[in-house]
Image (tube, rainbow over all chains, first blue to last red):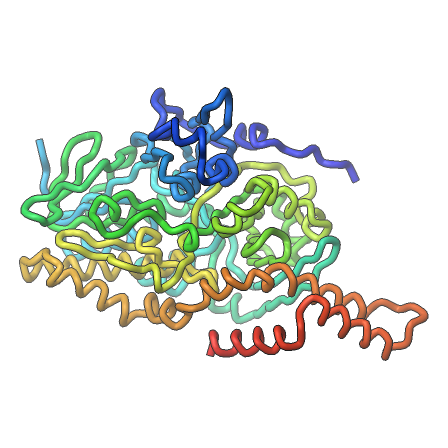
Length: 95
Length: 426
């Protein structure tokens, strides 16, 4: 049997349909708090689409990969989260 | 320019549409606001819709609705690293009187929403609600990016991340111990391949629950659609926070299980999705009404995790919310005085009766994750020892089985677990 290539998140997200807004619907309320994150970077660890990364002493957010599950929102009160504007964000073809 | 409706329903999923349909049918002026480009665009589940409850709105809906397959077989898989034990129930009664249908939400939800439209509700897509509007303590409408909309009653059917119930002051953040993250792939395969692999007739389907394939409290799920398979895993957020693996890594590990691989091999990934499920049960269904607002479906945390039910609770809560608004309209009273009848109706229906009956179960399993880890492992070891043929005598095999079982869980622990399970379900 052929060994199937491991699909990375990036590979997988190419299959999804998004309408990307110019403005992020996700933000960090107080970036200073991340420097001594009390949750061991739970936002990075629980996100199913690798939206959050720790780069140069701050959290970066690739909001266009977000599927709006809300996991980041409930594990950290420093995550700002709102619904994307109408029609924007993930748009499932199957669901 | 503000418009006034009898009711504004926020969210075009099963709960919102059931509410809108019920009210529009009774002649109320109803507006449905959906944030996605169409209903279902933001929705993901296992999953199935149930015939019994869907028929309350659309009799014989399967003749026209975009359903995938009707479920004839329910499977329970207990996985170990390289083995499984499978318990399965197939019944021809499910061919005579359908029980549940697999669907793709992005296809089914628009069809369902059309029923409310046909009944007279106004449906507006691509519209996100930003906040509630209050007047003298009453909620009297919602703010949207397209302007304000006024209504006698707002029905918040805006899903598990319900912003509206928070803005209405009905709940705080969704607690991590009440939330499960589901990660799922839709995998395309030719229809005939699916039917061969799952031993199914043309419209028949399988629904499967799989435990023993992930960290802490978790459950894999697998549903056959017409020419796709929905494969996914749900992991409690609390256990995910403790896990060293990311959600996609946990899913990939599950998908590579040697018992799963033959079922999905050569399949083409069509979509990768994730969603939270509010699985806390009765204890977490807190305030679901206030002056001028009702909460329905996932937003009210109406999910029965034990029986894998959600869409039926959503639809029923929507219908009951709709009926409550109709009653309020007759009385001309939209305060909690009348709207509290919604809670009463839910308590008297299967929705809260079932959840109340099983109220201790979510906490029990969350604090006893060995049901999802140790037991599947032990069951597989026992099955192996029972079947393996070697030089050993049967009495030695049985002895070995006992010693392996008690290594996994003490005699006292086993008795305690059996007692708890009996008590929780009886």
